[in-house]
Image (tube, rainbow, N blue to C red; front, side, top):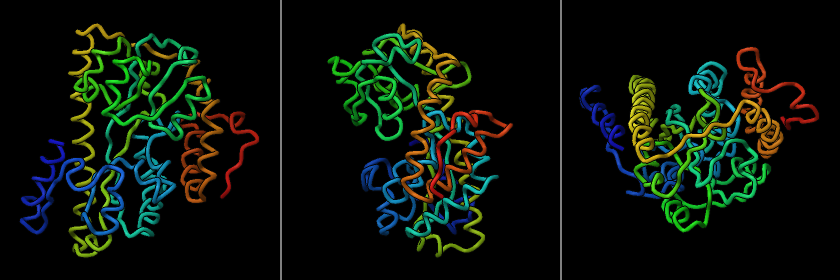
Length: 317
């Protein structure tokens, strides 16, 4: 929140007083799940939410943020949005709901805490696991985990009581502050360089109500677009810096980091691919967004998906 407040505090000075942002904290005005409705209905002029919360209004938003074994690095989403037409599609879909999707904001990968060591995907089998639901939960259910959905505030007590064995939440800094090292001994991650196999690039965004956007001059609109890039860089770097400090604290507390192998990644990809198609085919715009990403993931640039893995699967475009 502080980095957001700091950024908001620069806007008035940068614009000579023409524009100012008044920041509010989480739940100060509405809950996380009501943020897009709030901006759509004029309760708020603009929001900085996790994009996944938009999927109830914009089903394609499922693919405007991280999903299991999909695009795996921040720059890959930048390529999607700013090089392959993703931004234009997002803006078109949000415009249909009376909102302006200004641009993505990088956050960081989510990680898994466990009471038992997770050294391969087989170790998830039979484990009671907290996940956010949706596509993520379906992937882990397929490999044998017993998944449940819990709000963040209930994760610590559930781990403490043994109601669950394993829990995903956000990144190291936040999770350490929540005390997860007190109730778990292990953190499960992907192979080196692949921090989170299931939510590697958790994306937020800046979204503005259409009426508030229309009230800005063309120069101010361009300014807000460029400042969204600035904020994304600031926010992402601040999160990563805080995470580096958190790793030292986890180590001091005796937490062991275990890593899945590349073989595990390939097996999980086999599981995830048909689930991708299932979610994409729920909405034609979702299929359109996913098709761009799928082509990118199958290209020589990435090679995450092979023709054999999508054999027999079709998109309803």
